[in-house]
Image 1 (cartoon, rainbow, N blue to C red):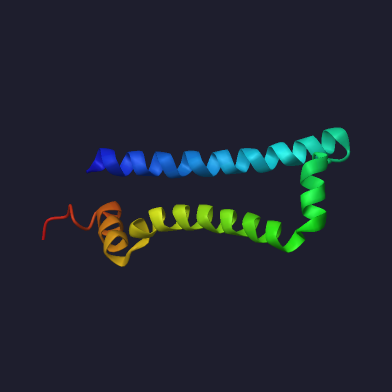
Image 2 (cartoon, one colour):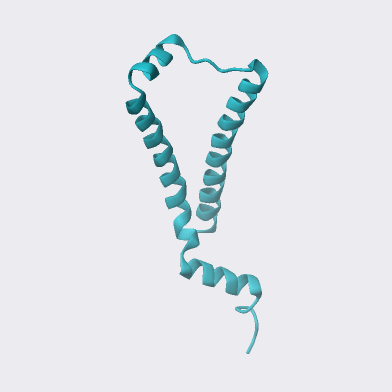
Length: 96
């Protein structure tokens, strides 16, 4: 169980780091080139269908957010938290 939980944590952290790296890459490209112009096909699509492409980008971002949030949700449940707090505080290891 511990290995599976550790793997789950590593996968979540790795995914978030990859998403962060893409964002930093875009910012780095804009700072390096002073602009970032998309290919002609993309700019024509964006000009002709701005609402549809904005919706597609928003759906992709929402799916990524849901995947990372729902994979972390069990770790934030009250039962998990109360047990981990009791263990980390040493309460469960004390003799009464």
